[in-house]
Image (cartoon, rainbow, N blue to C red; front, top):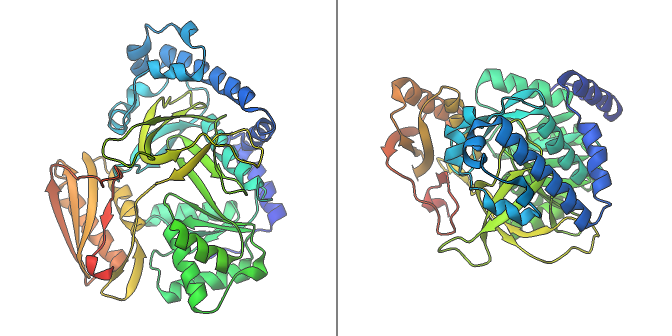
Length: 450
């Protein structure tokens, strides 16, 4: 269902109204972050250090989890950002099993529930305060501003939606209020891509965002059909959650006729890095603090990234191992921004695949199916889907049995999306190995396709 679009001016007014209603302060924080980008790196580090001290102090006073770990800590010993290494690392498993004790007994703003999949594939539900979310979106809009975009500018999405009716309806309403539209299917067939092309020409977005491989598939469709989007004068094509690869970036640049931009972040910590027009991935160092760990068996240029959200006092996330590998660098960008840069981001490992040699899909669909599982309070720790043939899909689950009802849900939802003629298997395993690079793959396609 496509709702008639708002014009950009009216969309900005709607956004202001939503801010007031939700108590978000995105516009105010955007002004603050735009001011910060005019400062020196030394001044940014001072801002980050002050935020870090405040975060740790608040965590010790009001978070039982951190008070137990750091109650003895002398905060006067924190002289610079590197002193954070005195604190313990936080794993995803610790975050998952200690949500109630991590949350502050004195939240600084209204708490909402956020979700993420991260390195395990299993969605994690956790509280996130409105103040932290405001910084999250402000960091994103600051990155958009580097390309001449403003809050309320129309957005086209190759992103997909939840598989259940309730959450799908919420997304449709949210899209309307935020002046954006999307292709509603994970099916990447020519008919679906043509439909998206028609919507783009009808609604004239200012920019397009999506999963990297979805953007690539759309770019290949345009190229194969001698089409491009030059007439739209798009400001950017933004990809997130996964890498595109150089070939994908090239085909999207050629067919979209605009800059291809990387946004890197996580639901837990917000925007971590945003690519500037000069091509550098700038760390949002006034919002997050970044560290790097060596990875055994990995290419020396790649490190495990550790993230501290400097703005989330209500649910402190300190020295968090999000499970991603990146390539850090000491180089600076000629654009003049005061933020350090990440050279390469490995990100999520995802795939596109075909069913019965016909319909093509994006593997993110399995995350959305399993997202429904997390809302049913199971003890599932991890999952992987292996495509054993053109029409056989095997779910490998780590954890206690989810029971017949949940297993039936998985099978039915998979068939609803991929087709009734497919076969769905469910198996329980003790563990799921990672790639040699250290990254986790939640989907492995049928090898005959490649």
